[in-house]
Structures are given as C-alpha cells and as structure tokens.
Length: 363
Image (cartoon, rainbow, N blue to C red; front, side):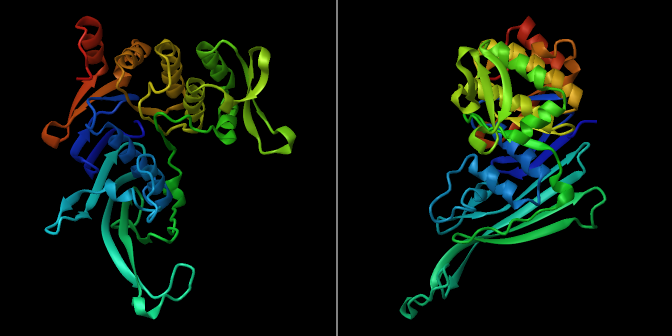
C-alpha cells in the first residue's frame, strides 16, 4: 500500500469530480497548460496537512503574490469554486477532497465565505474619527473539516475568521501534521535547510547524494555543513580549485538536484510532490537524477507525484523504471471546454507509446 492509492478531487480550484485511480510509486502528470496538473499537487499537499492554516497560506503564496491590503488570505480564496453574482462580484464556495491509502486522512472539506465588518478602532487600537462612523474591513470566514481513521465521529472542525490587517490564528493538530509531504515548486532554487541535509546524511544518503551531484557537475568534491564566523550553520560545497563556497553561489540546476535529493531522505514513508520536475535541469542530467530518485524512493518508501512538460523527462523516468514498469503510472490531464478529464496510462502502456510508437503522450 502506498501513502495514496486513490485520490478524488470533488472540488478544488478548477478541478471537479477528478479521480486518480490505482496510483503507483511514481506518478507523472502530463497534459496541456491549464489542465490542472499543479492543482492536483496542491490538493495532495493540503489534504495531507488539512488543519494547519499555515500550510494553506504557504500553498497560496506559491502562486499568488500577496496583495497589499490582504496579505494573509488574498490567494486562499482561489482554492475554492467561484460563481458570478448578479452584481458582478465573485463569492467563494466549498471544496472537497478524499483519498484512500496508508495516510490516515480520508476526507477533507472546507467552506469559504467573504465577510465584512465595521471597526471602531484602527488595528493599532487608535479610535477612528467618530464622523467616519467606523472602518469597513474585508475578511473571510473559513471552516475546515477533516475525517481520519480513529478520529472523532463526524470529523474535526476548525473555524477561522481572517481579516486583512490581522495575523491569522494558525491552527495545528500534531497527529495530522506529522504526515511527511512536501511540494517543491518550479523555477525556484529552494533554500535547503540544514536539518533536511542532516537527515539525508543520517539516512546514509550523503555519499549517494554526492555522486548524484557529481554527475551533474564534476567540479563538486564534497558537501558540508559549516558555521563560518560563528553564524548560523549553512550548506557549503567544495568546488574544484575554488575550495569551499556557499551552496547559494552555485547554479539553479545544482541547487534543484540537491533539493530533490535531501527531500527524499526527510520524506520516508511519505509523498514528494515536484512541480515541473525538469525545471532548471539540463536534459543530460535527467537519466542520472531520475534513476537515483526512483531507486532511493523505493528504498525509503517515498511516493512521487511530478508534473512535466518535457518529453525527455517522461522518457527518462520511464527508462529509470524500465525493469519495474508496474511502479510507474502516467495521468494525462486535459480540460476541454473547461471540464477536467483524466486518462490513466500504466507503465507498460507508457513504454509502448513512447518506445514502440513514438507518440507524444503530453498532447
């Protein structure tokens, strides 16, 4: 059993009644733009940490730049269905996601409603001019409900009212927040935390990680954690004749590869979500990286969901699992007339379509 064996997205962003059946160890999401591939990754991420409002805010910020007036919830409204009212405005609706698998969570639903209020004082507590008759303030009401195995009858609910000039009241639930899931966005050399790299070393993956990086850049000699001048520890790379240099000084491809490598170690028995797996990487690195990735994920029982627009990436991933085609699954998403649809392509079919017929499975 994988972390997720089946995923149903009833309503989330532009997705409706979308089901991914018989999920595998490696799950590739392909299809044209605006077909919902990234939305599937976001849905899995939120499903795995449903009662953590901070996780919802973080997911929203991956796409939406916080607006000046509502930095805490401006992007969250777009997780929810919208409809046009008679006065031309949009209002939020509800979303629902369900799944089966090793994760204890079974259903997540949420309701979002725009609200407003009059405040007699400013956020700093200073009274407004009485002539102004209070201050109109925009906000949102959001109610989260989660059902999980062994949980209370009817699930657990968390209610929040979010206001544009107030920090949100972050919620947490230890049992649910322990689900090891991470979403790695594209086009961003995500900062590698010392803790994550330390986990990779403790899991015995340091040498494997180093070998992987050397296939991408032969000048890399070693990776270390240092605290120069007594400052906070950071990751440094011994690079050719230059000696030790901070990881931040290297190219996006190296940082992207190291991000993927160390996340695998920190996600044992969990889920790694990679948006645009080919991002920042040269095609010559695909073979080495993907072979290492699927081997390590099998050893640590990590399930992979990855989107891609690259046919070379699809071929490299299929080749990496050529001896275990049952472990790889492709899902072709499209949205004709705005209605999301999905077609499942098992590993054997993917292999035949690419290596025997030469068909482009992305179309």
